[in-house]
Amino acid sequence: MILTITLNPSVDISYKMDKLSLDTVNRVADVSKTAGGKGLNVSRVIRQLGEDVAATGFLGGSLGDFIRRSIADQGIHDYFIDVAGDTRNCIAVIHEGQQTEILEAGPVIDEREAGKFIEKFSADVQKVDYITISGSLPKGLDNNYYARLVEIANQYNTPVLLDTKGELLDYTLQNENKPFLIKPNHEELGDLLEENVTNDAQIISALQSEKFSGIPWVVVTTGSAGAFIRFDNNVYRVSIPKVEAVNPVGSGDAVIAGFAVGLSRGLESEELIQFGLSMGVLNAMEAKTGSVNPERVNWCMDRISVEKV
Image (cartoon, rainbow, N blue to C red; front, side, top):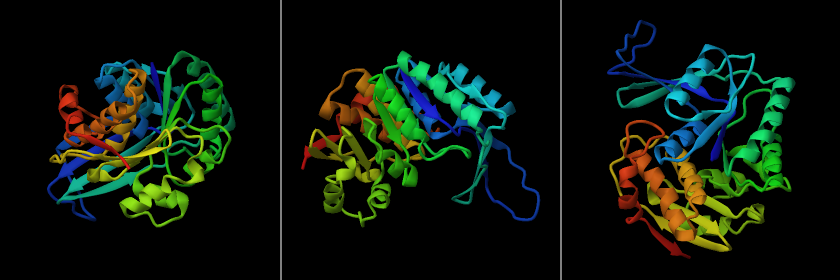
């Protein structure tokens, strides 16, 4: 089983309207509400691929109850813990070819709740084969929180696939215990190394950084251009098929799901790369965020080229 971690989940609300008018009433008929957060996108894709998956993090209030019901309906095991604060809403208003977002901060996690999660995670990690950690931290948690989770997972030889950015990623990588896989995009790679990383040669050079020492897989996504991946002291250039992108949001999360599933199925090197990157392409082809069509996996994998550079 795969365990996904979303410490600051949300109820994602999408309002689609022809026009957004300011300082007046806007009425909307096209509304969708989903259990949101990067890790829950990962969970959905894993489940759509037919794998056993559990989701964990912090949930509170009626919105937390909504997420619990949603993931239960999708066949995702509920490993979340309750907190006193309320789970957040994240609102996207889609209008006139634009998307205006209103994002709540979410609950503040106190020391007792943070400790309770660590205690439960220490037990949960022994039940699963792979762990994914996605997104940012809720307020109240220190930047070393992900590093603590990685350390606990490593104690039980359970690989961690980490997808975060900025100071949080940098801080986590400074610790002795390393994740098994990280997935920055090329812009996040540049921010992490404080370098100008805008072309292929710069990405390839950046992947040789000592900062990535001890991390078996470094996956650098480059949008529709594909990805560069460092594994086993080799760097690979990955080209993906050109498709009509219906909704590319969540494609990075789908890639994490693809690698987690591929690893759990025992796929190796180039086949694993093709499988993992396929999920990002297939997610972009679907209207719903964190969604793939499993029937198109082989079609997509056949169109992904992996070249050692």
